[in-house]
Image (cartoon, rainbow, N blue to C red):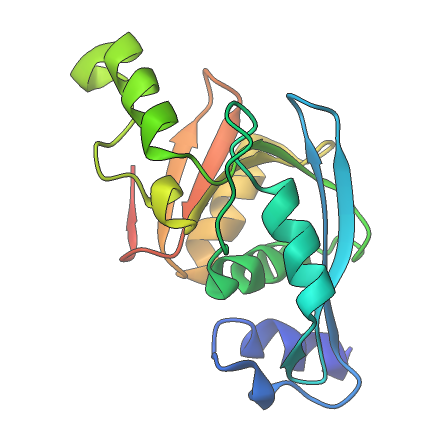
Length: 174
């Protein structure tokens, strides 16, 4: 229990060397559009694991274009903290609606939906700092509440579309 509390509390207190020895940060995601899954350890005992980061960067890529970016490590840590806040196991998959979004994809989505599409012209997705997610078996209300409680960045609630947006930008919610 203490190890989980240390990891959860340290997740937002970067840099990672503050992690306790033996602690691993792992993310399991499934892209709902491609059905591809990634289950990767991206940090261990305060050090990043390059192979795990590469797997997650690929798994969080823009599925429309295939473009990827080095995702914000604080976002990955925030997702670990969110999973812990929900008391879910490390290998419990988070369903990914959207991770990285290329500028081209962002522009197309924004044009399709107009200025009221919910797609920001300077989206955190284009910086590798945002995800739109759902966790099977966890209500959107509960997911949103856990994300808000962490205070790690922006939280958007899209119940009609069936997901919650989390990012590492300034703390705000909509």
